[in-house]
Amino acid sequence: MIKIRSSGILLPVQSLASKYGIGDLGPAAREFVEFLHAAGQHVWQILPVTPTVAEHGHSPYHSPSAFAFNPLLISPEQMAEHGFIGKADIDGITEITASPGKIAYDAAWEVRKDLFARAFELHRKEPDFEAFCRTHAHWLDDYALFTVLTRQYRDRFWQQWPPGLVRRQPDALAAASRQMAEPIAWICFLQYLFYRQWTELRDFCAQHEIGIMGDMPIYVPLHSADVWCRPELFKLDPDFQPVVVSGVPPDYFSDTGQLWGHPVYDWQTHEKQGFDWWISRISHNLDLFDILRIDHFRGLVAAWEVPAADTSALNGKWHPVPVHSFFKALYQRISSLCLVAEDLGHITADVREVMAQYDLPGMRVLVFGFTDDPSHNPNAPHNVDPAGLVYTGTHDTNTAAGWFENEATEIAQKRASAYFGANLTPAAFARLLVRAAMMSPARLCILPIQDILALGQEARINHPATQKNNWLWRLTPNQLTAEEATRQLNLTKIYGRY
Image (cartoon, rainbow, N blue to C red; front, side, top):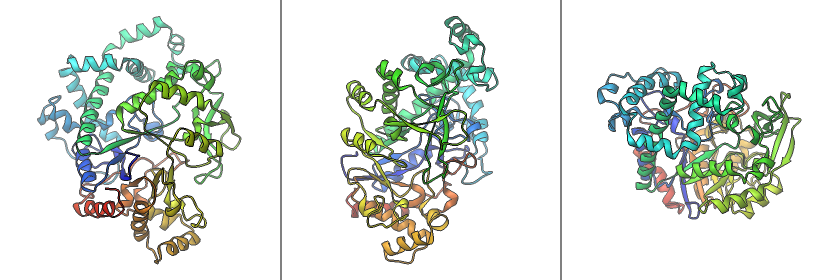
């Protein structure tokens, strides 16, 4: 899929249109796959599908588990189609239309929770569910218990739970599992529903010659099943509080850097354990996706570690990671790897060397191609790496039209106009940038759906280094038309990506 010249579209599952408040794995997902096929595309790139939490704005990059699935993405229609609930159970549900073009997380949960409870009561004894629990027990049991305990202790961090649970004493864990067997089973059942629907959707993609590119955040939050279960893998003090936290130095998005605040990995311990946790995590992701993008790849070469008490990322320092030992162990354990390195931001020579040594393609983003002279800017369309991926923008940037109208300096606008030989409007810039990406020498071209539709700043998904009003945008019904598919199909054929 990355070895041949091809193209695809970036659209998070949650950003699909749906009458149930959030995009999900149901009919709209299949309609989008059909749109991709009609447009001659071969890749659907999504964002992480792990659970999200309201306290962090439902960011898919802040999840309580690196392995679990987001139940908000379960489709009520698919539940009815497969007999988990009756069709009458969804016929009376009123479409959530309070915020057209926006995800309604709370309403999405409210409309699903009773359906989940009904399905659980009817199907909890099914052999397929029991088989799923056995197969995924290595992460599922701990995640389900963690989730139930988080609710039991009213969302307090796990370090504030009773000491026996904090330190995972076997007797305390066994007692909690017995006492909470019912809600634990319910959590597991939701994971089963997601996995079943996901498997069917992936099969549908394969029938239409579409591969799915997933996304793996490099870090996990402090309050997560992963840190609770394996605290020795992170740089924590005796009270299980972070000594240092994650972030990046000043970059395009912030003059003071980005302070993410995740606990940082203790790579020496990972190495002593043969990188088992990492290998299990990547293997799990490759079971779900055809291609896996590693977010903030440079963190596998060196990590920006910020003192935990700091309020900005300015005082962080780079600490090396045993990257060669890691990749040696990874390739020994997993024979087929299709990885993409997210190499945006502060990238140094050692990161480039690692990517070259392990033949890992990187990314170029065309909205960055006019911040200085395009003749030598590596993000200008004609300069992108033929072996890598080219994007007009990502989930972290403005849309192409929004960038041109609201972020580009007057000089950058003039550079872009000179580059394309026209006086540009925002929509015209977006259309021409899509064409330039398809024309570029990059082996794989990925286009955010917003840029194909020439949408403005209102369609932006995320503003890095900010906490509010992110992860809300989604398509409205009928935005994906046959005309748009034909337009993209023509470009795909013209530029040899069909």
